[in-house]
Length: 148
Image (cartoon, rainbow, N blue to C red; front, side, top):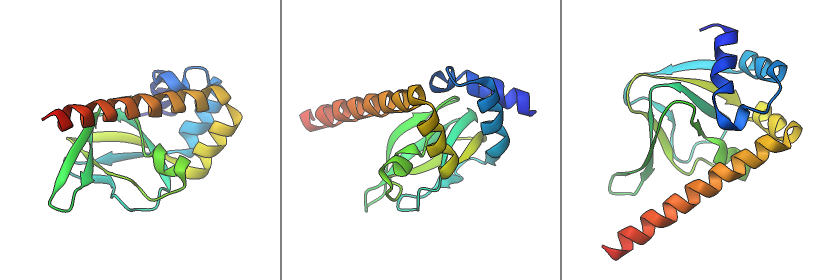
């Protein structure tokens, strides 16, 4: 995948649409393209939050360690951003992310991600909206589970 192809992939992600193409080129250049096999972990619950990932192709499962096994929380596909919560909260990973099949992602270093948010308020707002939507989905799941 060329740098321009990665820039085009980033442009498809709603939260990056307003970012200047030259900044996206820099983001793609400073980020690392990584490949995961089925079952391979992006990161483990409790790890230090050192990067965020944008899924370029494939899918990943978000899982929680519940002590007696793992609980699937969500499955994310192309253009999804994962791993940003630990960076924003400056806390260890709250869940593990596991490749559901062959998956390619762009690994964005913590410092680069935070700098992007500082330079582009519209990107920060998009990330907040995504986090709020996830919280609403989680609350709905918890309510449905409580009802039995």
